[in-house]
Length: 176
Ligand code: ZN
Image 1: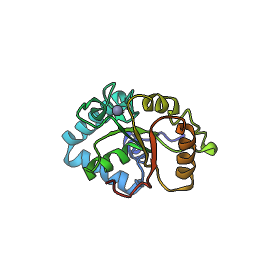
Image 2 (image 1 turned 45 degrees about the vertical axis):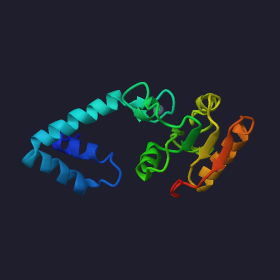
Image 3 (image 1 turned 180 degrees about the vertical axis):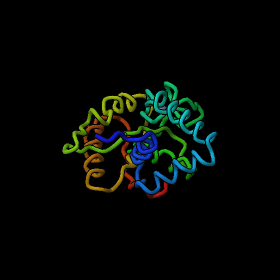
Image 4 (image 1 turned 60 degrees about the horizontal axis):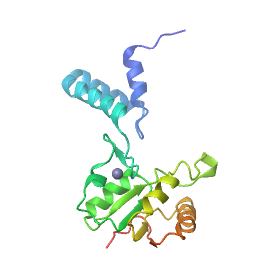
């Protein structure tokens, strides 16, 4: 059986990235080897560091390299507002809009029984715990896909007993 060379193995490894086919994988590796070995070293080292050390915030589940993310650590925010989103990318998008100053909860996906994602995978227990403090308004900013709607419906039912009011907005619509 033919052994793969190191170059072939790295090209194959690059292809774990979305949208990267064999041609662009080869181009990226050859670029680093021929023109920017320092950049390649930095990328490899930071990527390794990120993979080993970035986990989920213990309060909101956003990605962070500490126990609590910078948003949860920021005590100047409005603790009466909690915005529930699907992914860390949603947090970044809403933060860029600069129109929201509350806290977040990141589901890290939507309910999807087919893919084995139930309430446990979305951290629903942690969410309920998070909502029982001084949260007065819960904003469900999940996508308006079928799965997003089902997730929003499930969460509204689940949290209807809580004192906080629940607002549903479709993701992609700017807040405020
Ligand atoms: Zn957090």
